[in-house]
Image (cartoon, rainbow, N blue to C red; front, top):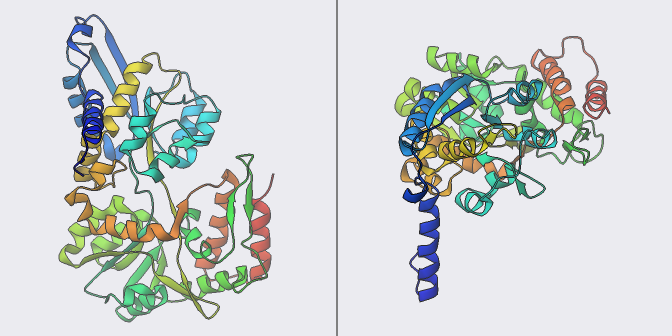
Length: 411
């Protein structure tokens, strides 16, 4: 927006100069002849290797003449980063990518230090991403993406816009065509979708370890057993299949899957398989206790951290900032289809024109940051797996939910 006062103009110029300074080489008078070798190890997703090597090359070009760089890439999933890193923190990577729900544990373990230049980082990124990268208001990591959520992909050749508003109708329509709609009930991350907008709760306690959970509630307009029965009703249809993300994509490609719940990481592959019929939308409602309940979702971000024990902490921080700056995130979207946390990159016409990103934004109204302790995952996965099988042993649903809550909230 054009500033209409001298002071506003001056502030804009100052901001521009500040942002430019963060992405330019050190001032000429501070440059020293190359006299050192800077060795940096970076952990990143296996799928990101080509992109990261491209960014390493541009980083080295940017800082040419200031050091000789030896940057080593090692594949490490973001979801498993915390456990791998804390197993050998001092011998770990200098820079690493991880999912935001691991931030508090990494900061508490001393793996991360509060960032410098936080004002510039915070102003450059979406507020939700900054919150996800912070602990008690202190920024500990660099926001990388703001797209770690899920929504509905569907093939327009099989469904109308009305069909995709309700999960049960999706499943019925797919069954009539001999096809399936998928969702991964072997992952508690996705199963939250059924409980999140029911008035029942799950979350982490102030100790940062234990959980609170009321999914076995016997009161209110929607009870725990109502949700469980709704899941059984869906699972009973030949038009539904609980499939992992890998199986979902394989089904999209072989034609057996015509809709499914997944995330932006599959956007490129889905569009390649379905072409002009590729559609994306917020999650639908589902039939539960005579009501239409909007499916919820966990949301989150991918972050870049700098190891507090890195012997090259300053250069590691510069590389982390380079990977996550506007250009780096724009390139990540172009290559990997991942939604930027950087405000300017997120507002680009390319990002705004993405059906997957648009669906994720529509779903954001019904999502919350994933904040649960470690004991959440296995009990929910086991419960949902039994629902997917149709509860073959006939164990009363209330009994199963009581056991689930007991295990999720265990100390």
